Length: 295
Image 1 (cartoon, rainbow, N blue to C red):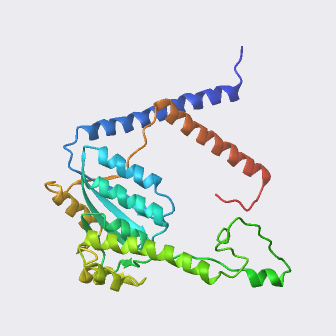
Image 2 (image 1 turned 135 degrees about the vertical axis):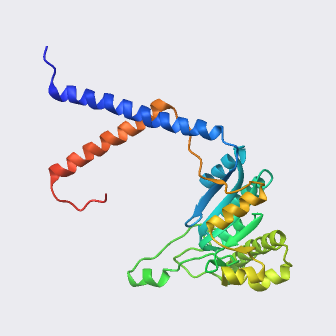
Image 3 (image 1 turned 90 degrees about the vertical axis):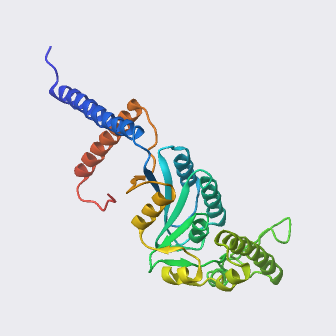
């Protein structure tokens, strides 16, 4: 019985794919095993980038580094203007726990401000570039008011509530004096938590921190003069410093992130599925002609 050429071709592709992914996966395992016999002279680097809106992934990565005996110290590469209060505080707490097991150094990138600076003070040492933008030790809550806009388009809002503060911050009406006072109290308490955390970790009197904590920003060089950072330098300087603090002799090996464990078959299926989906998508695009399409 003669085999259909398309089916034969697909079978050959599957066999080649299996061999290829087995080789790639095997190489990955070999590298992991090779790392297992390493002398342990490693410094892990964890990037904290963009707006901080969630802490789960970063905290999980911090915990993985904490449990990895081959990593002697950790560098947090902070490149963020800040973000949510709670996720910033959760990352801060995770770093404090990490310090019980490893030496932790912060390397500030272009911007490491507000929530980013809160995380930084949890480390043993802070290294900033001279031109890093940092500081902004402050808290803020934003509320929009579209009441006048709704009037112009003839839209009115009706609210039924169980308490006078239930719709506090509503965008369809002006905030009352009492509501503004309540929100201000929340912001002030969050601000107090921030300034006290900085004061305790940087060992700077609270009165001095408060004088600097009105939302203003500083360059890395200015921050060093004020005692908000310890050293000036880049990521490599922070890695070398972390190595020295942890007793690493010479230049340490840098580990960027931790690979998620997966089985060979799951790895192969995920990659094969991705390849097939891409081929189907590409053929579908070609059959429909020119398009505006996000690639």
